[in-house]
Image (cartoon, rainbow, N blue to C red; front, side, top):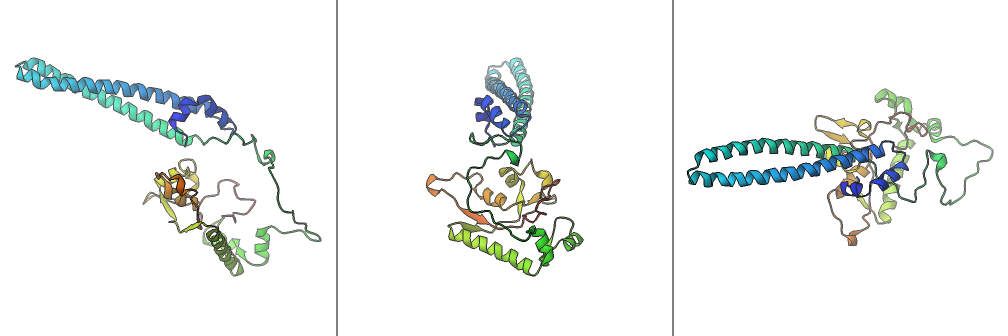
Length: 281
């Protein structure tokens, strides 16, 4: 999440770089954040001044009573009551500004690196380098993985629909064994490369969702257990990354290398995943 300090000190740069992402309300949202922050700062000064006035007045009440100036003391008491109401209103206004700023900051995406080319789709991607050789298939047309899965009875899509609904295929036989073998292969290779294996929980709290940016942006794609206010994880990245939420890492401890396997629970919005039939999940 972009910091308020960075945005206020780099307004034009922030809007320009967000333009690379074609984030349409960039200028409007950035200006609104700055406007709210200006109001918050002004309110804070007013609040500090009002609290100082009330403190001085409160201290004078005792002295007035001791001096026998009861009427003046009562006037001071009445005035402190007025100050308390004014302070309460200023605190409420500050809280509204802070909440509005936080809501906006959560909606503003991170800035792309300056080296990232601008584009609208995959056709605008820039090829940096290529490796290996493109396989040549002579005499036959290769089948996509979902057709191979049907042909060799590795995955049953219809059974998944019966049990749960669309998007939940059932792996069986050699398909289930292949899935398990690939998971073990990945974890073993990662461990050999120096990664620490993590077995994360499959549900996270709201703070973790905000910590990795799934909330509020992807809330509609997450499964929410409302009774406990917990979310099923859409990827192992969420719990693993949140291990280091609110943690300051020493440079000598970097890089941190973790790996994890988990089931991934997410609603595939719209046509997302149609080209791979959801099997990359």
